[in-house]
Length: 174
Image (tube, rainbow, N blue to C red):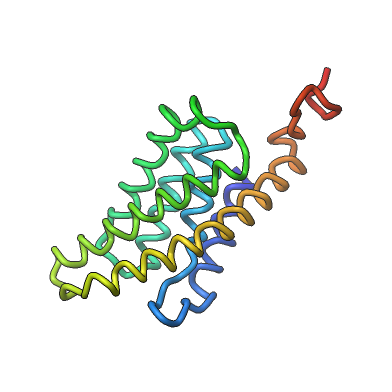
């Protein structure tokens, strides 16, 4: 729980303080990356806790209608637990792929909810496409960095062992 607290706190600070990318005013998805890490690489109980915590923080920091990120993050966890974990390996690349797919869903659902609530006017399609493309380009490196750092914190704290691919030497190779 301490590793999750540190990860969510650092992600919240980074999401709030790192300036947005200028042409489309897109912020890096740090909290999404933490949610995806727990959804892909940890047990389902930690996945749900991470999704709820990250969703509440994202909704609170983002200025969007409450519950949108929370719902989408929980949806990402359900998809990961029931489908992604059975089809893809438990590694950083999977976190990056899920982050991109989840990021598109998050951006789209937030835009739709802002339209429905009356806080946004409809924007041109080319602007929306550009915004999603920049968001996808940000998701890949952010998810990779977050997955690597949080996995390292999990290994150092004893929550997870070294990765043991091809029966090589590691903590789990007994």
